[in-house]
Length: 463
View 1: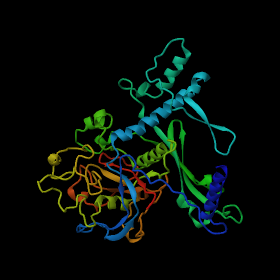
View 2: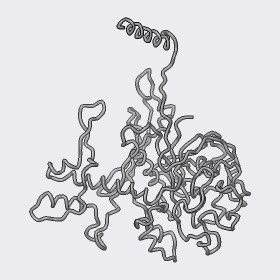
View 3: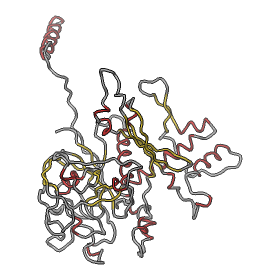
């Protein structure tokens, strides 16, 4: 019996050694798990389409001509980012600031509850990070003689308006809700002069980088540009600090001689509006949201590797809006804004002075109308949507026909004309022509409008 077991084991070893011949190129392969559908997203398959307007252009409108392009597969949010989803971002930033204030308490034992230490890869020292498991004492009371309670109260009280800024009750100070993040300037890393030379084990002596940097000065955000020699990979990293709270005043500032105070006070803040698309968001804020969403995904251990969340390119947006119908004038496929029953197919301004003919006055709940053939809701109307593409009227003449994209990463000292970003889809206050799949418009990336929102995409990994 013992001899037969030894013979079997020997045979297994011989066969296994035959499966990988020595001295030959066999490659290194690993079978990756198929990418699962991200929550709230739909899959957009790769394909080609005729990009540009299907309808005749208005005279002198400078609308681009059609161009056949190919797009790789990606995931796209089924609806625009809602108030409820953006509130998760706001609450995360709020809680991180509160934990930071609490971790600075003079009572070291109590302060230590709000941070923890982690090992830094490749280094001996440890890094200090916030302890997200700690409970934030939002309702702490001032107790005379209780040093810990007093310090907690003072830490939490910094989160609210005080002094001459306090108007009514205890209001969260939205001016301090700043999000700090970093990104790598791959466009500058790809410049020929900035290539790393393996023969000298260094960068070229004339290699330079021009990066963004933000810092706080007396409670104010200061954006600056740094031009410095490229000596290390870290030199390619830009940083940004941005206030992420939506501009609720856009409901008043954007519409003169109009009573919109209720929307200003309640559209974002009221709990019942969680399913409505978030508005009053600049392109920069949308970009920061995508970065936070990526880091939120990465913070959970053992999740499959995935691409980062980002804003869609203009080409990706139009390709997804058409829903696989190459000549579709609108996302629903037809050339009309009404269906066979005479009902409007989107939330927009159908008639002069008559906003409510489609059933809504301002933005409606997401997914209130039927989706297109890809399963995407509100690709026309409701709110216009930011894209990552920089607006250039003649971009169709020089962009590639594979994943076309034009992006200029404007710096803080650039003129306003270089800060224009393409918006798509039309909104609740636009006429029907703006809802067409091929129609493009622009807005400055720092502007926040009551008619502009956004949705995220994520590149697909695999075939």
